[in-house]
Image (tube, rainbow over all chains, first blue to last red; front, side, top):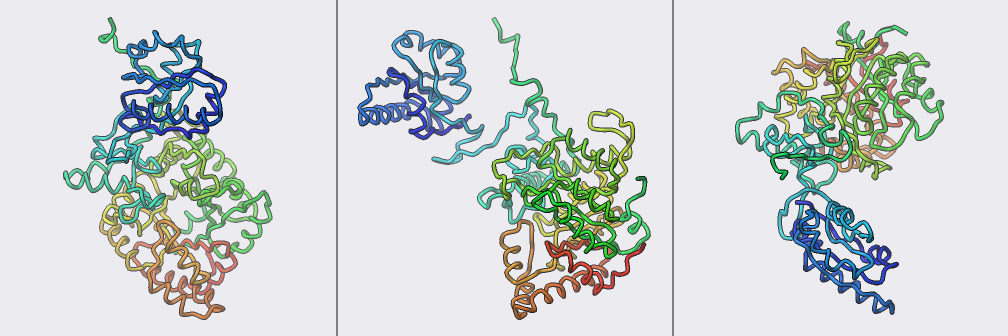
Length: 222
Length: 306
């Protein structure tokens, strides 16, 4: 999932300051799972903004609506009927959702309410961790299902570095050494031999070769 | 311009090699480097120049190497993969060889969060092992990544680092073997205070036939005070300072601690000289270059071969 966190309310207030009729748009997918931009968070943010506006005697309308997904046009279309009532949208989607909405409604400003963080998992209640960089060439097989690009602070493909101590990364004692995890896991499967080869420099063209990436699937097109 | 690496020559002769470290200044003053050069000249075979160590901005390693060279020293250019992508790294390798630098030490580099630019983007396009392999292919095959040919191959004696004190110990020999397979001619180790663990690591390297395939230079750093020892133990990553060493420093009176630190350092070198598979010593006297001569002298390493 894509994780995100809400921006500080003062930053949001500054961005929406020029507008009088604002629709806060939540997103029911990833950012709902990470409790940043789902229906509940959208309601809470909208009410906090309304309260702040009232306290400052500002004449502002802030309504709310949550879409299933802001990054899929079939869902964004649902804004068609209501958009004329507003002079700005405050999107609680990830960066992809904000941009998808903005592309569909070029006449209206779309303001981001979240900071998009990373591709990761929900590890525990209130704990999300980064685990994928979307590099376009998955190497998890070689490393026992643990991604050194995402989870080693130096992105080593031939680790561990000299800073691995007691299973912990030198960068932060809270960060487990990805390479210790890789070694432990491969050892369990008698597959440590996989680490004897030298993994060559990664082909970053698959991630950033020609600017923004695109997937084209003719079999999916009608 | 075509001279070969002095470090390589010494090691090939089978002489126990001595190298020192020179940290470039946090400024543009060339005298800071040439002064250190004069303190080290004649007492070591080569001088290793750090590349923005601990991720703190300093004069470039390449420029400082050039200054050392003009003082008649054999510089070892440290290059970290933290700050440069493969284009910049390969370009600098060519430039280094062109200005007569004959040794390179390929490192991953201290993570940027440790330094004074914690907001920097860490590059890590290559890792240190890949970088060793790239330099080797440039030197021996006159080819860069992707296979394009060079008009002239760089002439470089290639080094890499090893930390015998990092975990997991069992995997350290595998990683050393990978560095050698990648093309490392010499290995510089993390500072040795824990000779027992260093011995264990060396034994693993010996058992795997690695000590015959690469020249291992044991790293040492003289301690200036018990405070420095404690600081290094707790704050410097990858460092292993046994309590016995701390106790020994603590036992020396304040005005004698520097002497004690030098003594420990000399003893460590003498023990390493006796260990099968250690081909030399790398003395990292941090901002204390004037002590290198004394240490080399006391360890019976002077005079150096011409």
